[in-house]
Length: 290
Image 1: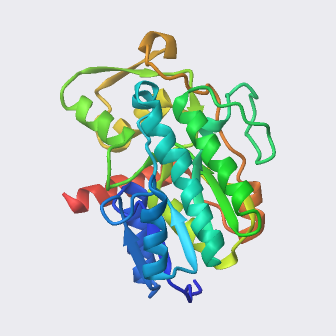
Image 2: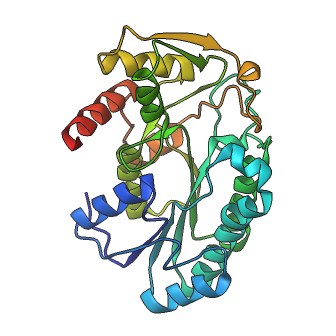
């Protein structure tokens, strides 16, 4: 992989994806500035400008977000300040400094009614506060930085450095003999190190516009849970299906939000491995870490 030759600012560096991204960038010899909210509060324009003036990044990767989908429903101001105002401030600073901005977004900008994998040009229709705040963040980046941005939509992220569905299932399996998991939402589980590697490839290419990047294949949360337990040697724990309505969460969720990765594959010649293979790698890495 070609080394990125200019300073790279990673915003949200202590999160699940940010941690893997910084590790990979530094491992490739990239001059990396890793900032989180204590060093740069993206909600505040002055904080963002101070960071840009101090570090002069040529490349900015924004993986900071308020991702508590249900929490966003009761805290809309916080959701929009981080997920919309934050990208707006970063886009303005990037424009002023001549930086290229890679911004992470989500499958939740879609309503899930298409019934086939979403391509980048499909119309968005965000359903809840989290979804609307992320869609607004996308809009600001496109409008304020039309020639120097890449928006990457991803979904169902799991990895070693944060709360995720895999850990939740493993924790529940240690406490219960029967789990109930939603069976009417379908997406593509995505492994944080695989996504981080893909993002670095994009940073070398600097493509303008929007791209979808996930691990390949698709599953429901129920199917995902069953595979987790199978690979973890906990197949004796029964996983029963339940509907989204039965679960009764505050935020609406798209029923089918699988995304088409063809544009990314065509651009890079790379495709992310299957989510099943990525899950197996995660469980192996998790065991070594323990």
